[in-house]
Amino acid sequence: MHEDAYTGVPHVSREIPTIRIEIEPVWRFRREDDGQSMLVMLDFLNEIRATGKITRAAERAHMSYRHCWNLIEKWGAFFGAPIAEREQGRGTHLTPLGEKLVWAGQRLQARLRPQLQNLAQELETELNEVLPARAPIVRVHASHGFAVSKLRELLSRDAGIAVDLRYVSNQNSLVSLAHGTCELAGVHLPQGELRANAVAAAQQWLVPREHRVIGFVTREMGLMVKRGNPLRIAGLEQLLDPAVRFVNRDPDSGTRLLFDRLLAQRRLDATLINGYERVEFTHAAVAAYVASGMADVSFGVEAAARQFDLDFVRLVTEDYLFVCRKQTLENSAVQHVLAIMRSAEFHAAIAALPGYALRDAGQVKTLHEAFRQAA
Image (tube, rainbow, N blue to C red):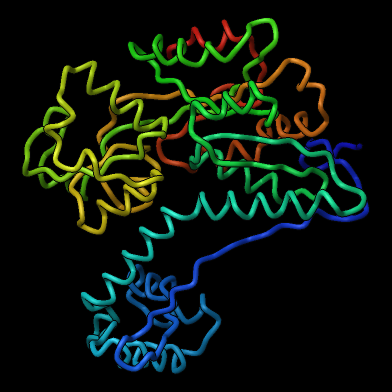
């Protein structure tokens, strides 16, 4: 093992690189009348929606302008309605059908991405286990989030380490750690009055002399609302208005647990919220749900709201941490992960995420030192 002269990150040299797997959904539409099917490039349509320019979308898709228009006309003929229209002097815009297709793609992508990444990771790990000259591996179980995705992205660039990162719920990550099925477990704890209960729930799986905490980031949690906040939603109390449509996170998620605790803190009846039982499985998925007009508000991270051009009402700050066994810190692969967390590249990536901030990233603490912090 040697240290990379540019990044300062320990590098484990080896002969055969780790094999990476990517799984992406394909949109194929089929007509019942004649069985005809059609592949539609929703990312391409989203680029038109975002820029109003087919030339830009064509460049990104590495296709000619004429070929792109032929595709658009072909798709329109298949559906029996235009998908995009040109307007003199104002570029190109999607029709209501085109908009519906794009938002359906956005919601599905946000909903399935963690599951597809988990499946790809499972297959990737199985494949690399039978290859010679395997890299040191570290197993990470953590809830899906923007900072964790950035960490995963940086780690995946290095062939000198194999990271088996699975997205699991906040509580299940600690169960994995207790059962020895991961080396690093992600945990998020709210700051302020709700911290004590969250810490108590986490500590039932931890032993102070055996476990250590690794600093990572903080993230802002709150309400995602439409641009301009047309319903003037300023707090949880307004969710009880039956005219306000809500979309919730899944019951097993840490975000759902935090939301329920916030409701209980304010003595608000969840059964009065229109849409409390309507759920999605990621921060991006609930944000896409609101952005597409299918709901008025949701609860999640600020970064997801900004990704979909939504306004955000901050309610609470969370500390996102990793927990491990003390002896695991001697693992070369774990040391590599800590070095990435401390690197300038990771710091720059987090600085670019709305609502995220570094908090002793890569620094090791005792349970007492980490869990007592509230600000």
